[in-house]
Length: 342
Image 1 (cartoon, rainbow, N blue to C red):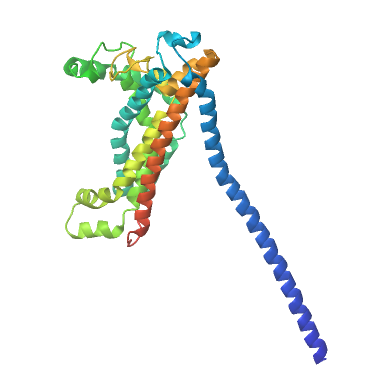
Image 2 (image 1 turned 90 degrees about the vertical axis):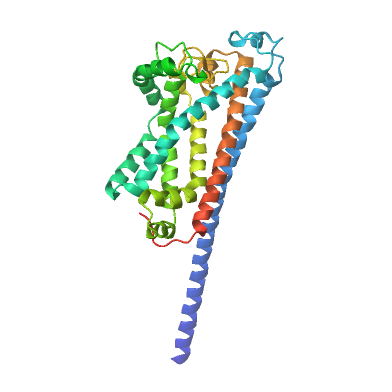
């Protein structure tokens, strides 16, 4: 009996060991499969990014290297003798950056104020509701913002444009003649400012919430008011994250197409005028949207080349922003925390 019992126990142990090995093998196979799947997904991002860059370079290179003075389709393209591709793209690159800067100047302070209210002033239920509304605003299509700008903001801003021109017309930004239709860079900048509110607000809100409680409580313990605590503890800690959020907002503004194309009456020129009609700098995205369907092959190459310039600028802005945000997150992980803000 004892011999049989020992044999049975040994067989059970052997069967258990075999089952364990099979289970471990299945787990390892599953781990390997999902590791390969996740690695492939991560690598596909780089492949797609490289593919887009290669496509833009190959398709835009013929126009970039062409002689615009002798090429029949390029010599008088869009009623202007540009001479070179760089002379053609420069005004639009300026227009894209200029419209983005206007949006940042108007939208960034409002977005930071909203984030600060949600994170440090609003009651919990109100903060949750406001955060939901801000996130919902990010889902609104750009064409809807463009129509809102045309129907509502253009006539709404006309009295302001006339006031600015009348009393501050000596400043180049507010020189006339004032547009009678409201098709101004000011209206486009206001709409872009609303469009970049969600991304700046969401990022700065999260950065504000990461501020170590120890810093805040130390400031309050020294007799600081709520605003003094924010100014002395929150803003210094969140400075790099705020800059990153603003740069990401700029990246969003640079690529907007339909809103600007619908609202302003652009021209291919360098301009800082905010109130005029027909003297607004064109943006790269808007120019591509308006002219690509009717362009010839070499003209499409020129438009793709301008897209390459926008791709490079947007990529650089976003890389800088992500780098700054990563540094802010590393600082958050290494900072001492007491408690957790909710």
